[in-house]
Length: 205
Ligand SMILES: *[C@@H]1O[C@H](CO)[C@@H](O)[C@H](O)[C@H]1NC(C)=O
Image 1 (cartoon, rainbow, N blue to C red):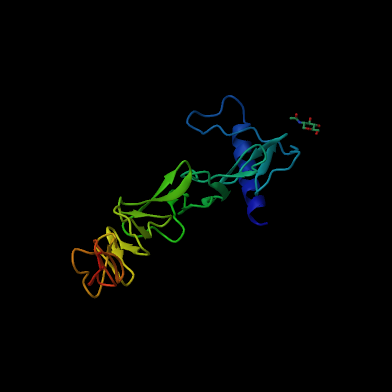
Image 2 (image 1 turned 45 degrees about the vertical axis):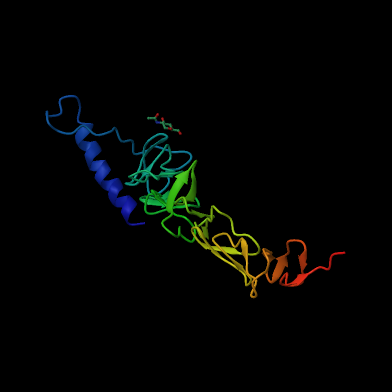
C-alpha cells in the first residue's frame, strides 16, 4: 500500500511542472495532463494510478485499459500465458522461463530428439527406434516364433529357435536321410523315411 501514494505524489509534482503552460522551457519532458479529481471506472488494477477520467497509468510490468494484463518480455512462446510480469504459465509440453523449451514427458531415449510438431511435444526417433520415447527397437527382419526385438536388428529367440529372425528351428538330434528340422526337435522326413529323426525306412511291398 505504500508504493501507490508515493508514485501518486511524484506524478502530482510532474503535473505541476507541465501544467505551467505552453511557455514551459524547452528540453523539459512534457508529461501527461494529470487530473486530481479523475475517476477511473472500472478502477485501475495492479497499483495503476488514475491520471485522467478512465485513464490509468500502469505500474511497471502491467498494461491494458485498467492495467489488467501483466506483460512478459520476452513474450511467452508456444501459447504460454503471462501470469505476472516476467512469469509465463506454459501449456503441457513446454517449459522454461518463456515457454521456449520443448519438454517431452519422460524424455526421449536412444538418441531421440524432443521437438514441437503442430504445437505438441514429440520425440523424433532415429530410424532404428520407435515408440513415444523411442524406447522400442526396430527389427526390420521381424522376430518370429515368439522372439523379441531387443536392440535394432537383434532378436532374442525363445529356446528351440535360432537365426536373425528366430526363423531356424533347432533339432538337438539331427534329422537323418535328408529330413528337415521344421520346428524344435521335429523333423519332416523325405519318403520313404519316418520316425522322430527320420531314422526308419518304411517297409515297401
Ligand atoms: C471526470 O468525470 C467527472 C464525473 O464522473 C466529471 O464531473 C468531470 O468533469 C470529469 N473530468 C473531465 C476532465 O472530464
